[in-house]
Image (cartoon, rainbow, N blue to C red; front, top):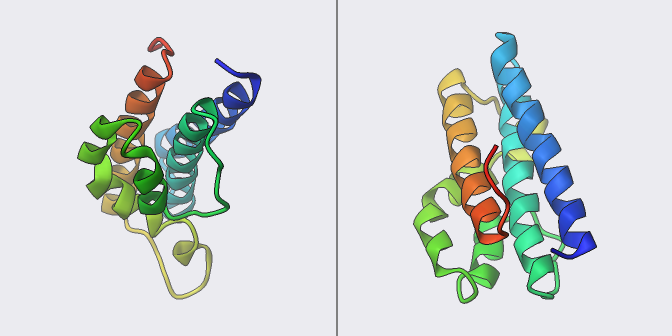
Length: 128
């Protein structure tokens, strides 16, 4: 694995671990949990692009990233629903007027975990 890919994975993993810690904390930080789930998924997708020596766009739209990855890793298409769901948490809930629910936070962590596992498998990273 390339050094730059490892850096993307490290950042993605920090976002995922922070989301897990927020979930375990029992406080109502649903917006923040959802945001870090989106960020983890985004960075894992960008790690796959980095490893394939593809340009990495400055976007938070996970469907756009999936479009770039689909030909390389068709298996990711099965995660499209989750990628679309998480995309909404990149910006919207960071501003007044939009709030994530506990149910959305639970779903976000579940989707982020699935996306994380798929990307780690594609990158040849063993599960912990």
